[in-house]
Amino acid sequence: MDFFDPFLKTLDIAPNLAGDISLLFLFIGVSIGLGFFLGRSRLISILIDIYIARALVAILPATWLAFSTLGGAIVFLAIFFVLFFTDRRLFDLHLSNASTDFFWRVFVMGILVTGLLVSSVLYFLPKKLALDFISLSVYGYFAGATALALWMIVPLVGLLFINNRLR
Image (cartoon, rainbow, N blue to C red):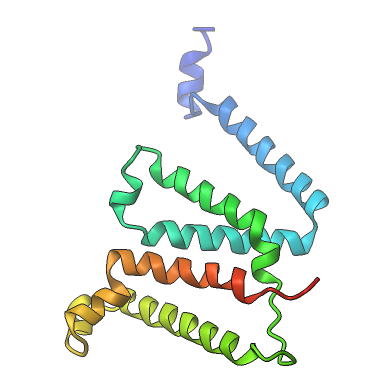
C-alpha cells in the first residue's frame, strides 16, 4: 500500500475520501427516502422547522449553549424535534370568526407578531442607532439577549393555545 501513497499525494486526494463518499451516498439515499416517505407538504413543514430552529439557536445567549462543546447542536436538534412533533398543531392555523373569542385571538397574535417584528428589526439595527430613538430599558425589552429568545419562543407557544380548532 505504501507504493501508492506518493501517487495518491500527487493527485491531491483527501486521506478521508472513503468517508466523504460514504457521506455523499448516505445523503443522497436519505434525501430520496425522505422524499418518498414523507411527501412534499411534510418536507416543507420540516424545512420551516429547520429554519425556525436555526433562528432560535442563533439568538439564544451564548451562556445558554455553553453547557457543552456541542451545546449549539444539541439545542438545535432538541428544538427541531419539538417543532417536528408539534408542527401540525402549530402550522395548521385557523382563526375562525364564528366564535366569540375571535377578537382576543387576533389581538394576541397581533401583539406577538408585532413584538417579534420589532425585536427582529432592533436586533439587526446597530445598537447605537436604536438608542438614538428609544431608551436602553425599552431596547432591553425587545433586543436584550433574553428578550430576543422570548420574542422568538412566545409566538410559537402562543400558536399552540390560540389554534385550538376542533378537529
